Length: 111
Image (cartoon, rainbow, N blue to C red):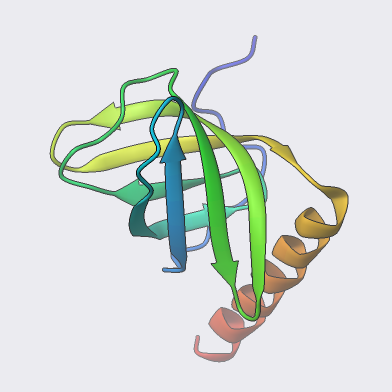
């Protein structure tokens, strides 16, 4: 049985800038992740998007801008959204993996 909130990959408590383009809206929304993994992220926002909303994301990871198609899977009013990554280019996924590996290494050093 597949649970909708079962995480396949570890999430890292890391803040990176993200530009969110909701489906059908011309206005981008800028915020930051509060956690991040290779298959999703959580963004904190006072005005979260409804579950099921498709989002185009521009995730700023180091010097790279990753383009990701995401879908809202959790919605907590006045708190934020959990976003599942639906589509990401292989090279962007490699950049994200490398970034998260460096975050994991830094976390291990500080413990």
